[in-house]
Image (cartoon, rainbow, N blue to C red):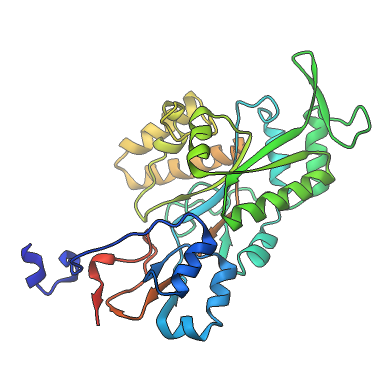
Length: 327
């Protein structure tokens, strides 16, 4: 590889060997970092990151960074579920989430609110999307308008669906071992109970969760998407052609109109026209509310001080490992 002999960063590739260690539990990963069993860790939980900032040993061994991330976290709602097919129910659930609480108490301030499927860091972001603020009374009204009432006095809303009385009880699935998702799930559970919705928390191992996603065997699911600074291509996540087992339109969003707009965005070369379509599509997504858009987290990360040229970036995974050099 001749590039190693050229002093130009964009073609440099300095490491001879790179070892990636997969640790699927946040606590175990943090312990490995503190013991210097790993040199780089990204996606550190906000609480743990705050603790690292006060840890003299960690500060002596690692540089700590919080670059903005092209990513967002969300609660996906299965639009094929009889309980969630009415947009008023999905809107009501959105009104049960207080994003300020998530940012301040879960993320320790290392996050910003998001309201749609495009990163606020991007030029094609629509800043005029409706913002569904925390509002229990509005949630109750929407649920009532959707036909959900407490007919038997058990403090859980119910409705006759296909001839059977169904309680508004929803299964909330999230990745096991991930504190952020667990905390969000608990917040929604507590607020939902106040308006007559029963939430069952279901932490799941990643392999099992992936199968549930592919089978669309979930009602509520809390996950995140990573993005790039490039123009958004909505086809993978939002086109109805992705409502297949190996597709990632997990919530079954879309119709002929949204599909057509996605296709037009992909083939339109005129920047102004494409920008208009981007704005419209974001409005269409929020109008149907397949996701409760939560926050865009800062990327809390640590990089060993043994390296030079190790700088943070908003691009996943948050660093350019090919530039790392031992001091």
